[in-house]
Amino acid sequence: MSTKISEEFSAAVIAARVAELGREIRASAGNAPVFLLGVLKGTSVFLADLLRAVDGDAGYGFIDTVRDIDDTTAADAMEIDFLSFIDIADRNVFLLKDVVSTGVIENYLLTQLRQKKPASIRLVALLDRPDLRTVELEVDHYAFKIKEGTFAGYGLENEGLCGNLPYIGRVQA
Image (cartoon, rainbow, N blue to C red; front, top):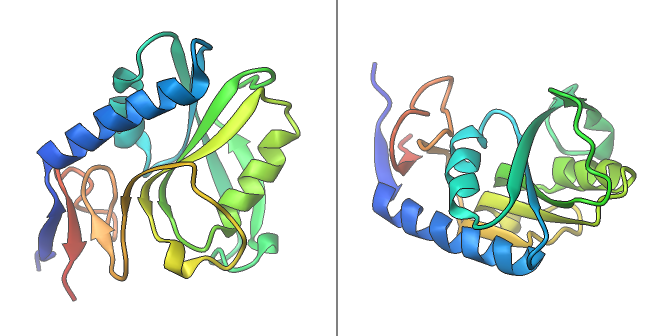
């Protein structure tokens, strides 16, 4: 059985918005080097495109979170796994997340990462869903705001599939 997905954001719209985000991030950091820190695995495609869209010096890394169940309470976010040693002290860090919904995991990550004393840290979402927030959290930069639904494509998977789509689509029930 094939998953039915209706295109929500075309590849061209995504490319234009990512280019604009690259300019926004460069403006936020000024002339200082930028460090993009992606939360695996949903940000991998987004991070690669955004990295190329940021002018000037930029680097990147990935982290993963290990949690017990769903992200409804801060206790569920158990640890951060740096996939390689990353020193973010005195760096302008932009934490990339595929979908920001409740904000619990992102709030936890930001709190933990601030302890590593970056020069600045900002949250960047591919898809921002503020109507589901359960904690006070602002997304500094986002590509698209969304409402209800499940999305796939452009690195976002639905049941382990559809991440290879060049667009972001709404999964049909």
